Image 1 (cartoon, each protein chain N blue to C red):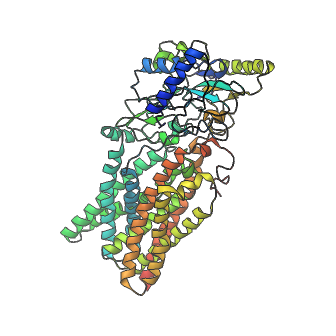
Image 2: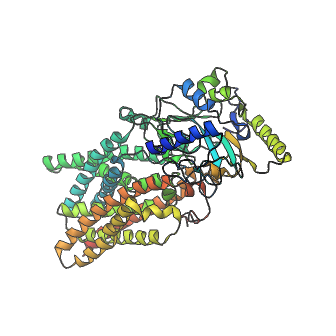
Image 3: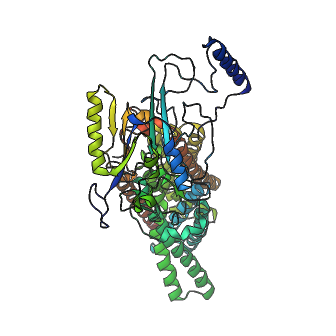
Length: 269
Length: 344
């Protein structure tokens, strides 16, 4: 589905603009997502990694608040605030323009909705796990003895004309939901505003120059996106299909030629 | 995935003392407690988000690498059976190749179905045909292969019982040929399946894996035929060719550099990949060359090829697990990966 194009149903492509500079790390988005989607508990550990005890996105965590605690020596306690920065960012499924999971799904369970999001139909998925290894962001995962799960973009809420649960719950409007093109313009303006204020390390993470073709849930971050485990150049794995199938064709040709040749030669002896 | 770093009793005592000190004096005079595992890797572009993985590891269970081994060998056997049939080779080779293909065709679907998270929905694999999904192509290839290989073996059996009726032989030959064509897919598509993913050690070898798995499958099929008593020099030649190809692949993989390829050389995965490479490569090759004089060596070469093929598949899936755990290649941190990408 192309950006900004109205779908045949007359709906518009929506997106998330997660402005991490407004995030206060309250985790209301994590809670709201879990509650609305009735997601089961996926355990609790004290990770020791700042206030991030969630760890990562997964089959039962569809919003994950990251805490980038940048202290002189991590884990040493103390109360010095020299050289300290503390960034918060709410990670989510990127709903890629060209989604690795959607391309990989062999059952046709993963589809593009009329709102432009990537959606796993839970009654179709048979848990083959191929989407899990096809996501360049490590978002989707398989629940044990069940299918694969990830952020649904609150497809049910959007169909009812509501805003996704996380955006609705966010107290600072750090998670903004709306028409994708509008959000992208707003993000550009916000970036200029921050730069003008002297926030030089603010960047927009929306990898449109790669085979992923841009993401519908994009971010405004401070610092290098790699610190947030966001790849520099994420690629939709299907870019490797053509070279791989060509290699397979060459191998198959060698196998056929070799087999026929070997039997013909031995027959002549 | 992330380790639990709850404080232990000793740390709690120290923390309680610090809290009392802070409450009474308004400041603390000593350093806090170190959580187990401190200091942690910081969140930085060079070190990723606290060293946590970016990607998710494969969720596949043991059935999947075993299927790669079984399905590949069965596919290659079907190719050999069809080639033997149409070049007029020994009928016993044709028959045994068809039986090997059918045995693999019978084992493969249960293996894959057992791995599914929801096995009762296995038929959903046939809801669509998606050429852009290597797994969809593979599922349909398996359906065609299983049907054709089973039909060929069954028709062969009936043909033997009824004493060579032409229509039955036609069915057997047609099914056997179709199985051979699908068998080419069975022997190669699993390399594409792994290569077209986001896992660095897999996608960086996307151009090598299809040929590697095909050679591995050929070596297994030849070994199985020889173990069943087939003694054609063509099989020996093909076994030599497969072992030589595996040796070549081994050289290519060992020469390539880059952090993303570390799982092929270190850890449990590296052990299996290298063991598999040696067993089905140089060892099988040497044994076959020696086996030109002695029968026993040829048999040993076959067993080495079979063991090597299974080790190779286990190793590559394990390498995928290890590769998914390392955040740096996935992030594209410079020097983390071989920039050539493995493509010519």
